[in-house]
Image (cartoon, rainbow, N blue to C red; front, side, top):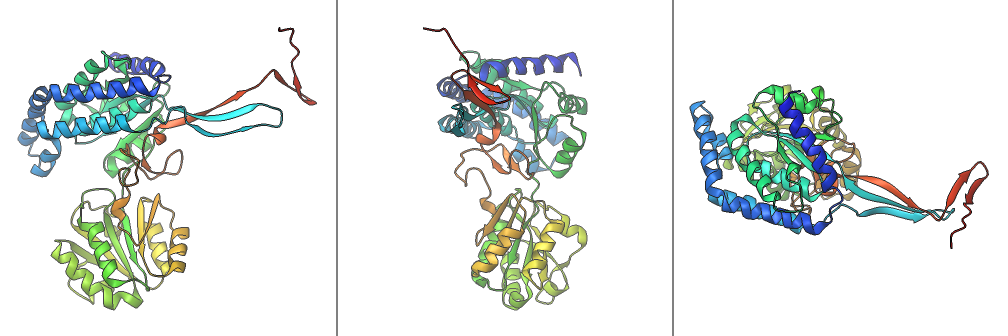
Length: 427
């Protein structure tokens, strides 16, 4: 690790210790100060962002990716408003998760506490720099931000402005740090900073997430990869199923909760597939279907790789199955554990699907697009976890905390015979 990285990591560690015990009010004031500073320095941010955009265009980056990178005053105002919304959310720190009085008289409580120092490794959009910082600060954590090198000028400006704003508040400015450097060495330093960083959260495509999981010595929360399915059951309402499928695929195809495969029971395929193919074609979606799907209309022949693919585009894989159990087996083989949906009028089928599908979210007669912190009522989210430890599904503020146990007594002592009370000459 370079001296420069160690300096920012230690600064974040010290800031985390100062930030953790702060009550809600100073954190909220700090977040509102950050929001005001972003708006006040919008011109400075736009100027820095123009450097990133110019560099990306010179490198032949697609206009779609450049649009994700670009910031203007309107977008900066929206980012600032998102920070204010985080300030308005309940503070999870100090919440009593559970508590009781033990038979020996000890009062036992499990409290939410910050994780400490969170490292975020992410791609593309510079708005993530601010969103991640705001969520970490609100939940009492310091953050080390390692964004894409394509947004380095923008991220540098944003972190500088946030740090200056925090310096005028009770929240230590060191709580928000940009990992120095634009090469993979800086990413490796963050992944190997066990003891300085408590947890890493990668946000991006499958290759980024897999790289972090496989190479990091710091605990990782996996987020984002979404090979989501819509299964149309034998007892589905065909028109409802078509509407749900088109929404799940085409409403916003580039996000992790968009559907990438649809499966349809053979008993309803004749009624459903022709309507689905027509509706998907009207939405601009290319269907990669098996032979039984192809018997109902024109499709691209599907491959095994297609079923594993998170397209993030107007493409979808499709197959006919002979049972709900076959659909579940397909999802288990090809799915990513993000979100899978069933469309059915049968309560029995819905219950069985929910019990058999092991995903972070399971939808019944609804689009996969609802797996989102905002839609779930959490406010903002840091990402959607597809693993099983610590956090699963949309990660709001509570998921950026751990817990600690606090027990309070009146002199209880543990002995081989059980609990005894300490004697005291106190008045």
